[in-house]
Image 1: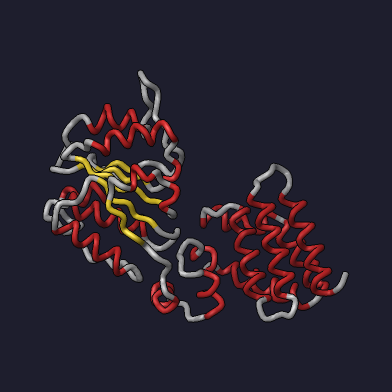
Image 2: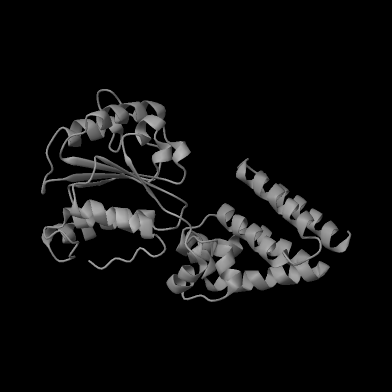
Length: 306
């Protein structure tokens, strides 16, 4: 299977190495969100499970993998990983994994792969139980953990794995991947594809124009506040792009920063944006519109003196 991992030469080299030689019991893919960790992990697993050995896409194993039905690929949800009930552990808990999967040989091939895309959400008891498994891993099973920051994992787990680094994607590579040449958009992406489905959506252009109007005229700022405060204006992003209102507001903050960076009042604007983001990240019920109202009032004073 042809797979391009653009902008990640070190990670690609290491993964290629472990496709040609026995993979260690634990691989830890670490680096920013939106730079290819998950797609790289799935490509590596498909190649490893492939009947031919190259992720051909045609063999029975590859067809099972494509349908997300391969019995030797266990993908944990992107949520908290618990240890599980002692007697009847629920699926995708560590006790369930140990008792119903790791104790037995793979169903189809020689290896079983367990992918945990949010290893930072493994709870303490579950992490301890997982550590015991990694100390004496079964020969037939391989773990892949994903995390943005290695500091979010215990050193005892890190020491038992091979760490594969991922980095932010260079702007030239981002332009090649997305087909975008606009420096504004590339800077806004910041070397990550995490927000690409928002930024490349048609609604983004409308929002960008409203922000530019808002930074240039008091009436435009009032219209921007009214537009942003109505969550229904972003319903399409939630329905079709799977983005929450809070994520959209986060993007709007970044867009205001980018659009105002040449203004003389940029330091004060940046401080106001960071205060807004800090308030939104507290995720206090019913406070979103309070933070927005306070932000736009402050922005009006900075830009227009009222």
